[in-house]
Length: 319
Image 1 (cartoon, one colour):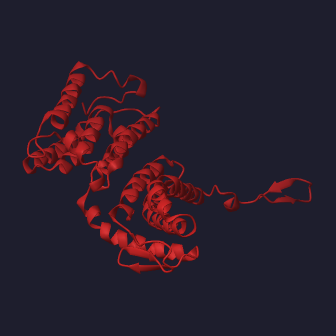
Image 2: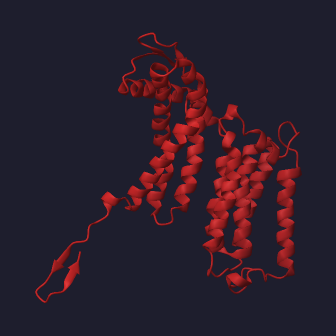
């Protein structure tokens, strides 16, 4: 297969019967390994079932089901960019398939669903490399490895306490800007004037859940920002971290503002439950849009003004 001539994108399906049989067998094995083989949760669940069960509030990963859907859209976008690219099947992709298979074997032996899901992008990218060539594999690699964002990582959960304290201090500072005097004791914030009872900044208010969801959004956004250079895309993707911390701090501070000036019961229940949807994500997405505009130089105040100069022969020159 590695010595076959390049094929045009309109003729990539003409790979021959043996190649299609091999591809079908490979995909069937992937389906069996991820959907049928029960090697996780004490031998009671497949890798797909393990992953679906890990998307729950305790892991701050309720948004996990959105990652595969976004990955499919990114793959569709990448496929649209491959128009006119000559496809050259190559056996070099077998090393990626083999590496993914070794990770899959390790996952079964250690009963680690995270390793199994982490192996999938290697095998998918390797298959594309084998049957459609290196350039096609390079184009489709990011959508495949985007699936890594669907895997809950324990290390992020361990940072929840630090995020709680950070959110507490940010909320205290933000409430002070709005004229609300508060007293901070650990992760508890109370009114300095006694107008409302103390609030506890629990794990759900730490911003960890919002941070993970915003990282997913900013990463996909950076990938789709095709007009930006690589370093600007990296900045756009990583901007989710500071944006999430700042936006969550103001979101929590808004609860104290509502408790002080509107109604404590409304602030602790209704606004607490809806502020993430009505305040955090709109504010974060607007900030992402503004940052994208700054990096792309598309904001009005960043555009260069055209200066018209007249020369002796009467011609106008723009600069």
